[in-house]
Image (cartoon, rainbow, N blue to C red; front, top):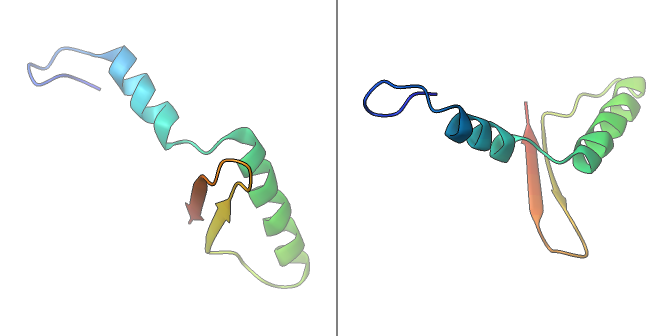
Length: 62
């Protein structure tokens, strides 16, 4: 990641990368669902999960 003047900005780049990643507990659920779907001959392409405690929604689509 570089700023508008072309100089490297590793802190901003890392922050943007981390913000785009799903939390580990969400990725664990996605991985498990993909395994189960695969065993049934299915493929998950788009998925939205909502945390019941916080109400935060996580979207996964590949």
